[in-house]
Each structure stands twice: as C-alpha cells, then as structure tokens.
Length: 397
Image (tube, rainbow, N blue to C red; front, side, top):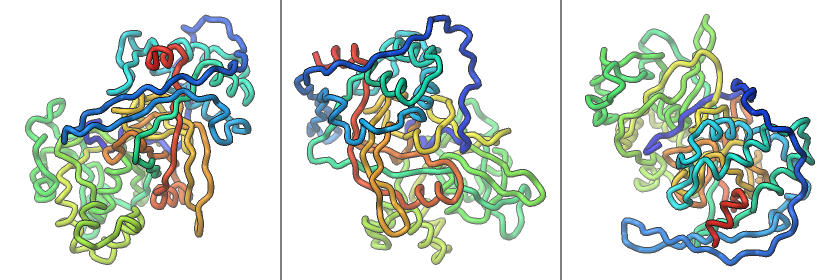
C-alpha cells in the first residue's frame, strides 16, 4: 500500500480455499542443493530524495551461512510459501511481482511454485530439500543500517452496534462515494473526527477510545466484542490517502516518550493516563483508515491470502518481493528477557510503518501471547533473502 497500514486480518491458520485441479504435473522429490561458489556482490544504488546514495549489497551465500538453518523445521514455512504460490501462479508470467529494486516477474517464481504445489506427502526433510534445491540465499545488507523487527496481531476491543455516551468513537466503513474516494481523499483525521463523514459513510461499530481505533488502523484489522452478539471481525478496506505520521515519533519529539521506551504498550499507557490529549495528538497523523466487516475471522495479507501466525511477515515491498522466503535472525521478547528467534518467514504483507530495506513486522495472530509480542517486540536483527536460482544468476551477473 502507499501509506496503507495493512490489508488483512485473519487470525486463524487457514490454508487452501483454492483448488489445485489445474496442476497436473507429476510430483517429484527434490534433492539437496550442491554446494556452490559464492558470487561477487552486486551493488544496488538507490537515489534518495536528498540526492545522497545508499548502497544495498546483495551477496550470494551458502545455506550453511544461515544460523540454525541445519536443524530448522521448515514445514510451516513451506505451507505459508504454498499460499503465496497460489497467488503467484494466477498471475500473467510477465506481471511484475518483484520490488522497486529487484526486477522480477511472476515467471521467476512459477517454476518453484509448481514444484511446491505438486509435491506429494511433504514432510520436514522434503521441505528443506525443496528450498535448498530451488533457491539461493542472498545476504541483504545496507551499510551502517541495523535491521529492526517488530510484531503485529489481531487486537480485540469492546464495542457496541449503537452509539452511547461511553461508546462514541465510530469505526467507519468506506464512504458511499466509493469506488472513487475523490470527495473524501483529502479529508484529514481531524476533519473526520469533527463529523465530516456523518451520514456519508457507514458506521460498522462504536468503540470507546480513539487510541484503540488508531491501533486498529495500525494493525489493519481487529475483533469488536459485542454483548449478546458474536464478535464483529473487521479488516482494512481503504484509506483517505493523507500522509501517515508515526504517533511514536510525535510523542518522542514532544519529550513525552523516548526512542528506548516508545513501544505500543507504553503509547497506550500514556494515553490511558492522559485521555484528553489523545485526539489533538492523533490529529497530527492525517491518515485515516476505513474498514470492512468480515463474515468469518481471518487474516488476509497484501496478496489477499491467509496469514499464518509466526510465519508471515510484513515487509517494505519497495525492497522485498511479496511471496519471497526470508531467513530471519532476531530476538523476541519474553516477560523479563529476550530469546533468540531464527525462522524462515514468508513476505506476505505490508505496513505503513514498515519502511526500509532491513525492516520487518511479524504477524503473531490473536490472543494474549500475540498481543504481548505485538505490543512489546522491537528487536534488531538480520535476514537473508531466498530467491529462485535463475533469478539470482541474472541479478548478480
């Protein structure tokens, strides 16, 4: 998305829904990749608006260079990758599915995807052999930049279907003027809060806190708990097109929080103790997200496919192609410490706050554990991008 915060939300692990009957290739077991020589680094020079040049270095490495790769269980990652493959195989082979700086088309992925989807009786060993046979790992580094990895989840918020004195913050659906947002594209958050959309857009539900609505926008979806009704599941439907401004950066700039403690949990805590400051500070972020009601609980990523908790990751698609496997080495928070986290993630989502080559946001699903990780995870790390072999040969030629 442009300043899109997320397109999704499905917190249950649901695969399938798309038949495979049109794949008639015979299944075959792939063999482990032969050791290859390291290729020279390729340098992508990216011109920023300031006219300064940043260098992002792509270097082919051996799978042995990936920490803990040898004893990883890749079956959940393999299943997540197959979900992306169902999307990629529907695309015209010439359709651009790379990133701004990696020139790739759907054809680059389709051979590996056909192999994945026609594999019979997959298991952990076959999954590992598949990735080693079809891909080369690429170290993706940016000089003087450290990777930052966070988490997101499906928040649960109490609400009502009708407005009352306590539940008076609306969750808006798309304005009735859709499919064009021309009349509302430039309405800011402050204007919308002043009533500019009253009777011009449906209200899906009413919740109490503007900050809860803001974090629903950040997460891209959520679950509204309703009395005497089943929960209402909502997900991203569109936005006003105004620029997104990080609320954390606003609080840091005003000296209300520091870079070290500007976590989602601390931001919520600040507004809980200073509720009168919520709307004026939130209004500095002019971006506003509209939602849609879902019939079933589900998390949909930027490819319109189900997200898998703990294995789907949001990335900056200017740098990382959607659907790409990414070997991630970072840490995740526990109650009083952090633990090592090394896993093959699949790039399946995007986020307005997910900007930069070394940036990622892990989808954790729903529940207390997911909420804790989504609110507290803010860890440094590195990753290696897995790209189809023929593509690597072309890019690094």
